[in-house]
Image (cartoon, rainbow, N blue to C red; front, side, top):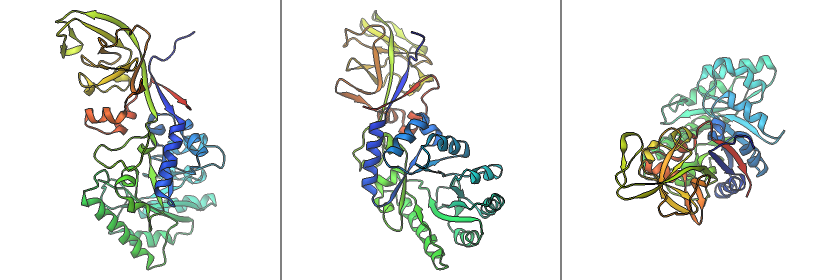
Length: 377
């Protein structure tokens, strides 16, 4: 047998499809758009997209044109539409229109450029107006949106299918700013409706809002976007309104097991000193593989179904753990960094809480040498 990956992440496609189904049921009759940007957050867009398409998903979101084309290739023919949710640059427009990608409109100049490209290609371009109601990142300011939409709506080669916005604080169900964003967005809808402008797709909610602001899945809204919830993860500050399961398991193997004497210090900067003779296992994963240094001396892995504490600073390629309570551990044994083993489990959310971040950061930081394995259990 040739060399194999020492670190791998398993993506449970059955759980992914199940999570999608739970979200669909939660927001019905609103449509669910699956966000698969950044190569499905580094998990492998092809397998995830096909599993979701088989589960009934027909609309997929990405951040930029390269992702849109890659996702389009991955989807079964006729089984899904691809939408860019952020922005499109002038030199990207023609190719996106030619490939039937649904585009965001973040300003009048962009709307005109998309219409001009569509005219040359002799095919209408489907667009969604992106309204900045308080995120402050991209889009048409809410106060300017009615005038921009009226003018853009008159452009002959645009199919003005949708309108959307992005929450800044939907992870916090008590923050009034999200309510203000909803008010501003609805104000734009009301203003343009007076001119007879309506939209087939209206959306603000992403994963956090689905859990914390259920009104964003009800009229006038008829579509939601979800990314992290598909993986079974949540923002640590919000509600967990959905009974979702984690789809991810990050695994590695034991490199060596030694009994080290009391007084031994471990790793760079000598952050851990053994208070007693200790069985220490070195595992074949480090921060280059996605184990945050912030887990040093604060987190656990599972070996043989037992929790084993990480001791000593995590290095680029290895970490050391206390396996005193797991006496049968030997070189080559499987290590579950996050996932389930022996009735116990550790999730990306657990790591995120220790690092003071969110699960997106954990998942998208898995290194290039980590093998992605799509499995169905």
